[in-house]
Length: 156
Image 1: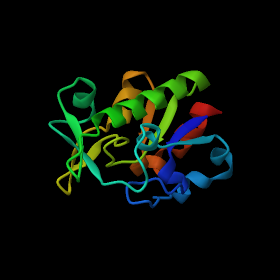
Image 2: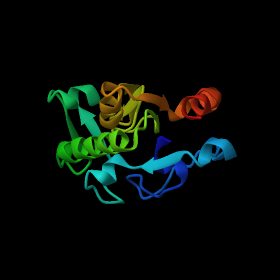
Image 3: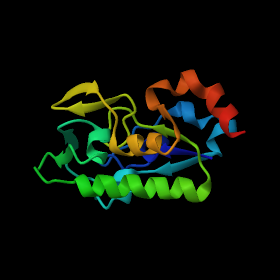
């Protein structure tokens, strides 16, 4: 099995209540292995919700207590992001999952990039950072097509 950011599988769980479906994930050999997760919902945030961004660093800094996650309405939602990341890790440990496909540019799921002030910057999201710390092979949604064979080989 592979955990996947639920928005990539068509679930309307993004902050704006929409999805970001990636049809590359719907190949017959792969789609039956995919398990959708939305860390922000697992952390207790509603959908839709104000967009959030990491202030003072990236997801690694949030895990270390050096940065926080703040919504556009100025609410500190750091604890929700941490709780969601912890729930995802608890799930993968329970299920023995070692691969994840995460939505790039998300404050939770970004693998190489996150958004800050409307710009895309280098950095990892909170959940992806925690997954990487726990030895999970995390794939960016921007690289799905490049990694399809590798993905299938890792879980077959």
